[in-house]
Image (cartoon, rainbow, N blue to C red; front, side):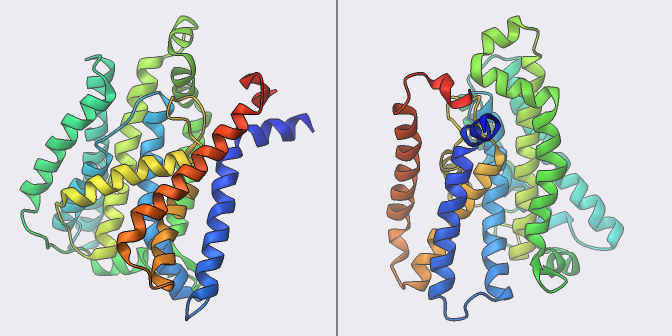
Length: 326
């Protein structure tokens, strides 16, 4: 019972986001003319996974007590780059994918080095580097367009065995291969320690600098993967500042809805994934109920406020916050 209470306390936000997503998606499917069909689920999954990957990226710096305002710009930079080089023979396509992901990781490493070794505030650092990455995106793709390897794009945006959306399989692989090993590694634990009590963690011998550097590098790697997926979905690239800013802001909202503390040290990428799907489902609900798209910010704000309020109410009911983890 004690272990169950501990697990519930640590994953309360993620479970709340999951329950909210299931409820909203059930309402969406129940009111959709086609119902629960593979094309409907695949379309929803493709849209949701894009934001989920960016939300996972945002989670990592937030866990350290920072904030990455450049993830949206890395997202569109890598989308613009992928639309130029992920094309041709299988070997050329593979090299292009590696280059795109490598550029994303390099962008994150630059962010991390400035934050760790330059000792600048993450929010200022990533605001500045985000502008640089947007400039690179404009240089790569001054006008929307480009191309992508069609067979790979079709595979990544369709289904496996005609049932499961490939994008969801990719998301599961990222969770199992990237997030969980990192979460359990010394670097991952160092991120939580830095967000909880950085001074105490440093005095205890935790490699705070390495953990932060790894967090920012991995964050931009995930944003690059999302940019690559956007290229597969749209078959093109676009250096759009509104898109980049929207994904950045929505990634922060997804993290909050998923139960990760903006102060750092608590939460995780799983909750952020469900938070991202909650936000994406709002678009689908507006569609099936034939409501004006301009209402989207209103509903997103209501959902975000409700999620934050429920989490805060739970904290206010206890006398000692350590009771959450006893």
